[in-house]
Amino acid sequence: MSALPTDETYLAAMRANPPGSASKVSIDLVRRLPPDEAGQARAAIGFCRNHFQREAVGLMFSATELLRVAVERLTPNEPTFARRAGQVQAAALSWLLLWGMLREHQSTDLRRRFGETTFEAIEKVRNRTYDAHPGYRMAEGLRVYVAHLTMPPLRITGSENASGTTTSVTIDGARVLAWDSCPGNLKKDLRATPTPDLLPLVEDAMAALEEVLIEVFVLDVPQLQEESRRLLVLADEVPEGTLPVITTVPADLATKGGALQQDVFADVIALIRRSPLGNTTPSGQSG
Image 1 (cartoon, rainbow, N blue to C red):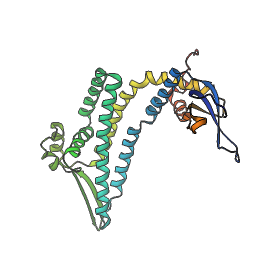
Image 2: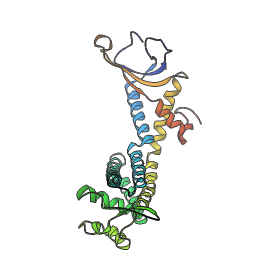
Image 3: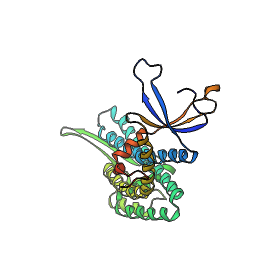
Image 4: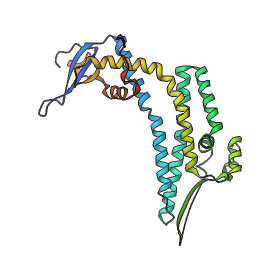
C-alpha cells in the first residue's frame, strides 16, 4: 500500500496474507469516502455495535449469574463458609450497583436521544413493572440502600446435621424496615414476608427488567434499520473473503510515520446478518 493519497478517508478491504509474508494483512482501497459519508459510516458502526452488544445489559445478566453461582457454592463447613458468605455479599453488592448504573445510564441516554416525552413514556412502563414485580421493587429500593447507607442487608446461614446440610440467603427485612427512607411498597412487601429468599427476587427483577428493555429496544428500530442498511451497502462493495474497513490515511504517514486510523466493522456486519435485520434491503435498491 505505497504512495497512498493522504489526509483522506476510504472504504477499504482487509485480507490476510499467506504465512511468510512481510505483513500479516494487506489493505486495498476500494473508494474514497466523502467526509459526510465517512462520518455517517463511523457513527453507524458505533450505534449498531452498541445496540447489538449492549455492554451494560450484558454485565447485568453476567452479574446475575455470578450471584447465583456464589449462592449455590455456599456450604456450612468452616472455614470456607465465612469466605463464601463474603463472596455472596460482594456479588449481591455488584448486582445492585450495576442495576442502579444501568438505570441511570439508560435514563440519561433516553433523554438525550429521544427527549422528555419518550423518557416519560418509558418511566410509565417502569412504574407498571414496579407495581407488578416484587423483585423489581426490591432492586429499586436496595440499590438506593447500598448507595447511601451500607452493604446489602442479607442473612446468610448454614447448618449441618445427621440429615444433611442446608444453607439460605435471605433479605433481612428488619434492617431494611429500620431504614428511614425505605419505600412504602417495599415496606409492605417486607412486613408481609420479613425474610424473603434472595434469588427468587433477583430472578423476578431480571424478568421485569427484560420487559422494560424490550420497550427501550423498540425505540431504536427505525434508526437501527437505517444504520444497518448503510453498513450493509458498504460491506457489499468489498470483495468476498475480505473484511470491510473505514481507513483514514493521515497526511504525515510518509514523513512522520503516522498510523492509519482504521475501523474494522466485520463484527457489526455479522451481528446485523444474524439479527432480524439481516435481510434488510440496502438503500437505493428495490425490495
